[in-house]
Length: 332
Image (cartoon, rainbow, N blue to C red; front, side, top):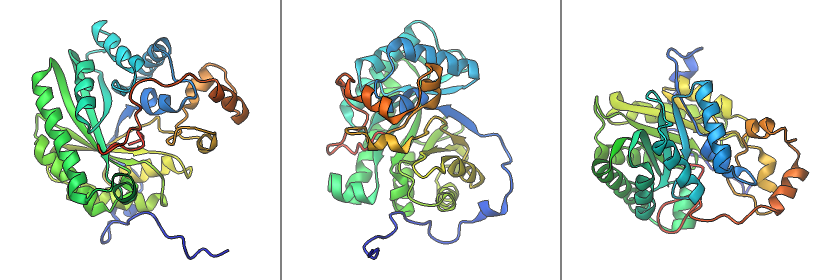
């Protein structure tokens, strides 16, 4: 077999960023933000109903999570109503922050703020894809044009946060980070930070998603260390990890990323690789095991395929929107 046509799809950190390799343990406890209700839910053959999402949310509170990504409120009526239910029924404890996801598209960002109105504490997590493949093959835009999408998104969330009732923080993800030149990802993140102006009273989260595992975990660790050491406003920035598990090394990505300087992680990004092979399956394919086990459902591809064939049509904006907006797979 001729393998000469295949090459690596990732971009190593420039220079030697190997400080993580000299450590045998982390020195501070990381923060955790559960994304089961969003990244896990989007892959279920039949997404959770409002009642199921409420049940799962209360379970996460009992577990002790203080940051919970509750959904993509512009994606469907269920996602929107779930967040409104939490806010209007005062179901968000004083020490808990909810997080919502939105693409860098104006109408989606505005819909997201409508859903978040009155939230006692919410993180607006916005993203756009910056990878080489999506720049060149999907959006057909230059680096400068893609960066402008991120910057304009940052300007809009900052503006709306000042206009809407509620307490808001910001998180930005350069989606498909692992398929992006680290130098360019850093350039985009720093441009976003210049808009958001992190400070002692305005901590901003930069999240580095392993949208697709494209390398061994040590490569990701060096990429994380490079970003950590070169981010502007680093003292006032929380560096977060969002590892998927295509190659089965999501835990290793997280552990080495924390050694490399990250402060926070997104548990709940587990992926059953075979789910991606189901006819018509969503590309991101995240499968939350606890949901299936809680309902005593056997994790068998044939049963999931049977459910897939009878799933109702999805309504509203899918979290994997594209177009010329900079949205990507929705797995950020």
